[in-house]
Amino acid sequence: MMRAQFLTCCLMMLMVVAHVKGQALAGIGVNWGSLASHPIEPSIVVNMLKDNGIKKIKLFDSDSWTVNAFAGTDIEVMLGIPNDQLNRFARSFNDAKDWVKHNVSKHLGNGGVNIRYVAVGNEPFLKSYNDSYIKPTLPAMQNIQKAIEEAGLGGQVKVTVPLNADVYESHSNMPSDGGFRSDIYDLMIQILRFLNNNKSPFLVNIYPFLSLYQSQDFPQDFAFFDGGKTIADRNNQYTNVFDANFDTLLWSLKKAGYPNTTIVVGEVGWPTDGDKNANNNNAKRFNQGFLKKMASKKGTPLHQGPIEAYLFSLFDEDLKSIDPGNFERHWGIFRFDGIPKYALDFTGQGREKMPIGAKGVQYQERKWCVLRKDGNDMNEMVNALSYACQGADCSSLAPGGSCGKVDLPHRTSYAFNQYFQVRDQSVDACDFSGMGQIVSDDPSSPNCFFAVEIQSSAHLLKAGHVVTVLFINAFLFMFLNFM
Image 1 (cartoon, rainbow, N blue to C red):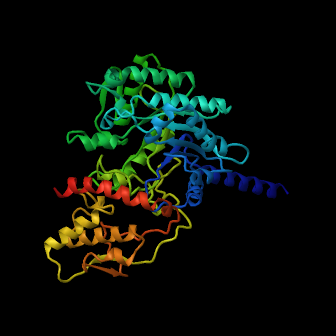
Image 2: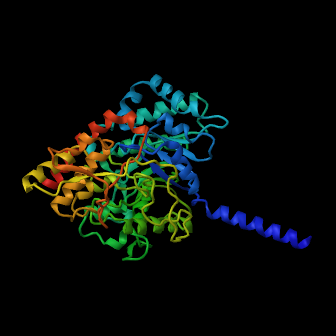
Image 3: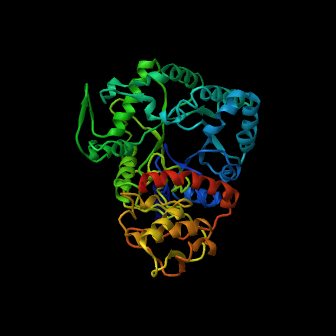
């Protein structure tokens, strides 16, 4: 009897250990963007998050189909309000009240969605926006906050705004010289007062990759967490740019009079394509290192303890603007179809463990569109390539991209297939004045992947939007890569 009880106890302990090992690191969530031509169905994504033990998700909108998929789970959800809605909510409290009713209150209650935050806008003070959102951001936040309070949810749902790390700066690049930008300083003080009064966190996006991308002289190892040159600032030693950036914010908050503001890292990650430094190995090195650092709970030189953060991003998004760079569509830990790209241990233990991919994803027919092998001259190929890339994602063909070094015929075939797949393999989408042909043999090479698109009922809702966004972004690709 004693032996049986002992074995039962051991079995229960093993089950508990196995369960704990399957849970993602506490305080770590993931961003899930919606700018994909063929998004995976929300129910499949939610199951994938549960399989990987991920308990926190950050959205960029409040799409009802997506939000409903989280009902009955314990996954914590951050809703998003896009920048193009800021003026509307800044002008009208009634509109803000209506939005809260249909996008927050509607989903709460027993068996509902665990909505924790509403993110108003997304990096609205980027200099590239030319002050377009300077005026409406805070009034929109205030109206959404007031609507949440009137709904009796002020203690449950917190209002914040995701800010790029460019809202603060240090002219010496030392954290202790940090301060908020002079052109938005007064506004930042008002936002800090709002966050403090409502016990809301300061949401900041930190991208070490961009430090490397934007400067040829930036020391590469300083972008990662596993060694490299140490930089001293007063009595603190910095071994990576994430810590330095985070502490620059802490200094900025201290100088502004709000040293105790809670900070949440809204976006942090590494892309896998579209640039010489964007690849699976570097993304794995960065994200694995970041999770191990978060698991240690050592924080930064100025912030001892755990940090709440959201990895960017869950999936690649083929409709994102490539204005920042061709890498912008390739931040996903998982491919567009939910297949993991590299080993990543969400528990922070650093194990060589592949994440669990999406289950139940259905693909379209196994066929590709490629360039015919006969009768094509160079000018015809260049023109056909240009045409295809006006209506499809060709960012992998960019210099430094995974397909950036293939020859012109293969580049043309890649562009043809991208155009063909995004149009659901329509026969007409593989014509190209007789230059294209549909094949059943996979034309992929070791470094250049030719996709087969997934079946997606969600993309039918976005059909018109898909074409519009692709053509808007096409000029940017052509200008950056063919001029």
